[in-house]
Length: 640
Image 1 (cartoon, rainbow, N blue to C red):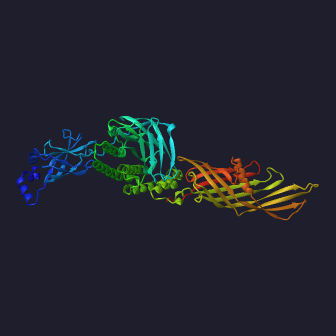
Image 2 (image 1 turned 180 degrees about the vertical axis):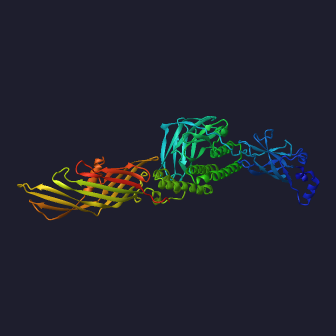
Image 3 (image 1 turned 45 degrees about the vertical axis):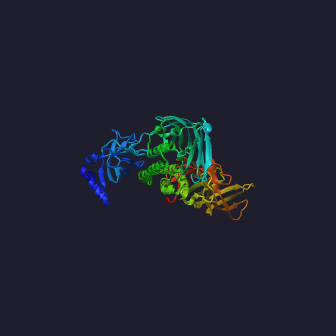
């Protein structure tokens, strides 16, 4: 080891080299003994630069220092050199008492706060300590999530509808704490109903201090493209060093520290998605919050600690800026490397990545003061957010087509399209609802047997009517409350329209009789209209399928009267007997005709591509028999 630093043991040569302008450069490894120790007596490290705020295990970094001899380096919990410190290997280059050390974070360094310490040679005196908040390696394993139990004040609920223009919502807790949510423009789609409900209490294991208050924001999980800011104003002031922001998801899952804005006069919490947020009055500051249970919680807790020190005056603005920048850089690299790749092919990882990218952007905008419109921030994350959102949208379209699951439209397709519009990547309306396409197959075979009711009749008629109707969204009509009008028209045909019925009548004079013969010749020009198709969607369940049906189907009959009473010419008559039979079947099924003359038919939900179906019985106990089958097929084009 001593041979690597031979210039140190030969000071005369060193001075000579410097005199001729070729100063020798000392190269040393941490742990060097021998000549270094001899020359370190009485030496002092007068300056030590700050390492990055966050480093991963095994990562390399460099710091500058001032020392007459190559120093050794340690990581210390308490910023003082001691027996419990962890020595760090280093490559050192030094000239004229100024040097640079390249160090590597130990692979098995425990998670926690560490300070870098440099001591001259092997001496434990004359050491210098980094001034910035200590390094906290990203943990190999996170703590188990802490679940918070909250009680909400239903009497203090406040609701507002906020759109793309932005807006504000305020609420007051029973203890006098006030909350104001500020949503910037372009953060949520138009017509977004937002609810803020103050807590009456929050209880969680491991939480130190007194909970000042908080709110539950709904709808739960709503991602805000440009974030929002929650300002908390306690009735009684909370000392800066005791202010700790809290956040959780769902009904209290994953309680953890969240950073507060840098302002000393306002308590501001950056909000990137809706869940629960609040304020704790902790005697130990952010250190008293539950341990992080995931990457985002870890980086948020780091920021909370840095900003807590800044707001409390324990850290200079310059050091805080550098530390914050280091945290944000490492955090973004972690999201891009660990979360984005799986999010490109699966929905749940994509939502996690989007949530964390938006959290990164919102935290960055508030903490650095750049604001939600900062191009420098948005350009780093929003293209990736849009790519992930489009992936969720595209996969939902595919599932809607392949699995015939139209609930994807309300659950994923429309919400993602709204987000994409806010991100500057709108989806064409014609593409948005294209999965809402159906085909109605109608097949009716009805027969009338004369004589079953009236013995004066003989013969029969039979109708076999078929139609296929394409039903699709009417995009010319407005979309009201998420309801898209569906209608369609298709041609109908008679596969069979035939038969003759003869009626024998009494002339009323003596025994004279006459007969009327009505022959069904054919069906004539006609169509089937579907002025409306409706159904309800609740979660992943579709029900209450109703089809409005009308038809202009007519038949042509030849009518001829003969007999003792009177013999008339042959007449031709058009009638809608088949339609009348269908209406009779609809009424018997429990549904009455609509005011516009169409028939409202309740269909039975089916499965697969057969969306719904119904068989109407034309049997009336008299002469009519047969069935009319309606099959509604989900028939969308290929997914975009």
